[in-house]
Image 1 (tube, rainbow, N blue to C red):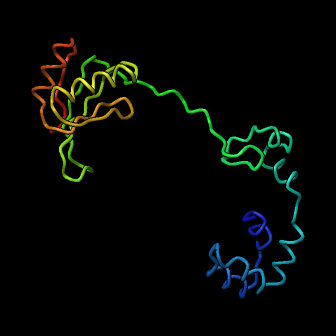
Image 2: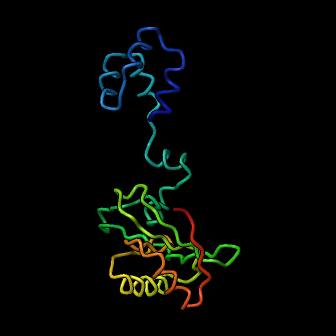
Image 3: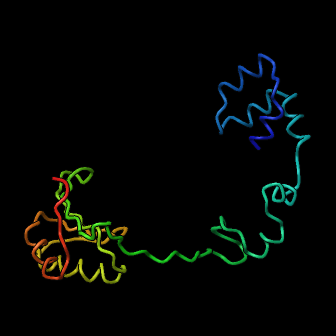
Length: 173
């Protein structure tokens, strides 16, 4: 609809320019009522739903078949559950070392250790995270292939990871 408005008002009068300067999404109907010339241009540009979908690169059949990627809810089928992508595990650094980093920024002043560079699937990262949480007696989680431990026990974590066969490097503060 905005493209139709933009095409319809390529050469607006000064009064229309003044009105357009104060337009927000909620005031669109008021604008159309106040400028009959603009309303006539927009109304002349009305197209059917099928034509609009075709212009956007979709056919009416593909929408009816359920091949609509942006569809969230349908009155026919109810809530549409999309297949979630499989979670990727961690990725290793080129030198093969595991980075142990202490972070406080953006965490409300709380210290968190992040362990990155472990190239394992998510299930193994979760198991390692659970073992580290038990060892440190604290909380933690796996987010985007990075293990977060909610304590500043770098020496204990470094010792545990070294026993598991990882080459550990301290990074950051």
